[in-house]
Length: 187
Image (cartoon, rainbow, N blue to C red; front, top):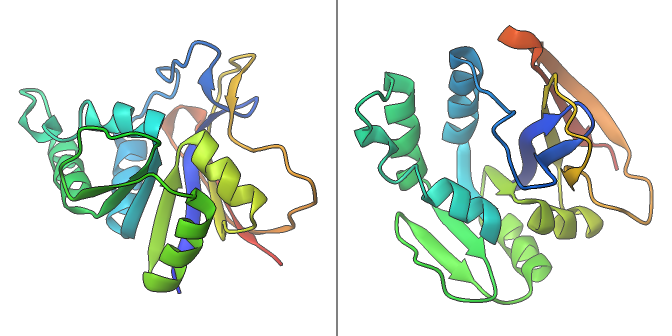
């Protein structure tokens, strides 16, 4: 059975984007970027909501061709294209790069995918992750906290109707005071 992981860059006050949808405050040092690359390389499948898909697909399909691309960015772009992806959206989007569109009921499909895939599945996008969180499908949370307060916007955590007990797994500090915390569903 697959393990569903929700991990993103998060402001210190708990947001993945500010009120205007800006994520530029989540500056990635080479050390942090390399860590994200290694995380993504360990995934069997990537699940995206529409907004995150639009953000990722606007750069990474050709990110390895940028004249100033570092070797780790080239590797990330290639891994991104090669990793199977599913986009959950209500209408057809331009898709390519090993990607399928799913327009049905997201929670049921995520439950099915967890049974079908062996290994780790990354879920991204606040709305999609919120639905999976409320359904109790997320096995692991990875928060990469940046030392910035954005004051509002898109929260990392959804409103839930019950406690979700987590077990601390690990923490790591990166350059610039960025900290990663990993937590598993404790049941």
